[in-house]
Length: 96
Ligand SMILES: [Zn+2]
Image 1 (spheres, rainbow, N blue to C red):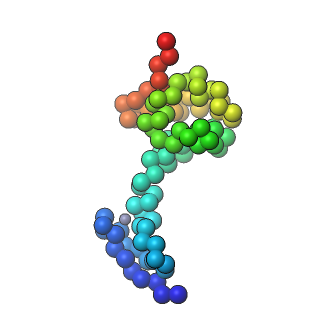
Image 2 (image 1 turned 30 degrees about the horizontal axis):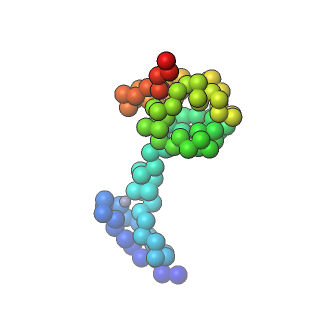
Image 3 (image 1 turned 90 degrees about the horizontal axis):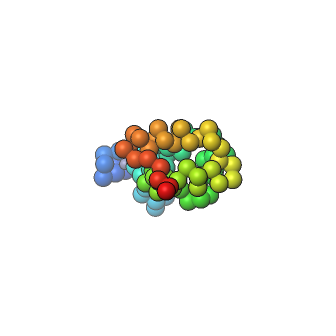
C-alpha cells in the first residue's frame, strides 16, 4: 500500500495509508479527557466515562456526592480530581 507523507494544518508530519487525513498528533490534543482522567485509577476512570463526564468542564458541573454515587468511584479519587479542577480554576459543583 502506498503511504503518502502529509503535513497537517498545524505543521505535524505524518504518513497516511488510507483516505483518512486525520493527524494523529492533533487528534490526541483534541481529547480534553486525557489529562484529568489519566490521574485516576481504572475503575474510577471507567465510572466517569460511563457517566459521560469526559471533560473538565463537565466535571466541574458535578458534585462530590454525585461522583461518589457512581459505581466504581471511590473517595480516594476526589482529591485527585479536585487538583485537576484547580489547575483550571474550577471546583466541584456546590451543593446547598
Ligand atoms: Zn497535526
